[in-house]
Length: 224
Image 1 (tube, rainbow, N blue to C red):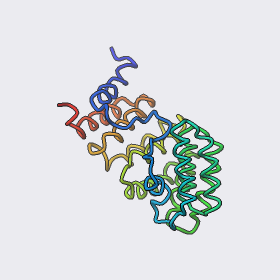
Image 2 (cartoon, helix red, strand yellow):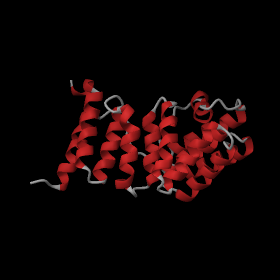
Image 3 (cartoon, rainbow, N blue to C red):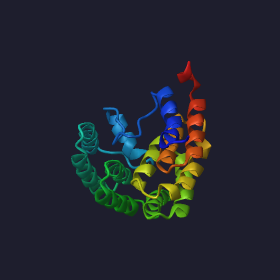
């Protein structure tokens, strides 16, 4: 007899065997405490160099995140983004608000990020998040697929995508998520486990089992 537990079991087993994979339940990723790490977060699109004062503010905001003071970090980042016109800082503000389940603040940061990237290739990314949040998944997919190719840690982008869904429209979003995850299947266990988890929420057992197996295949060293 199949029970609700049988849908969860594949992900549980994969999660246990891949216990060192990133935790998608945490509110924010833990940043390195360094100027280089803070600069990288705000400057991955080769924005103008940041001054030491701005870097100090960015580091302070990341420390605030680590101390579970996301509201303070958000306000600091929004102030610096407006002052410098740096889209990367607005993007980080959106990431923090989005992962902290603060939709009003996330919308504010997303609007600023969109404004600061107007007329540039990066403008596709905040537009994709807007489309995602409104349920227009077809419009969001091309930009996210392109954006993911530029990222060294695709699992972080998927984390943001899941947060943008806010637990809603899982069934409708699964085709988008599985399509975006396909290039990383069986090579990025964190992505596989995340899709598995979302599939469980959507009661899609076949998809959950598929990505659980891919996660295990992607990291056989954890099974030794």
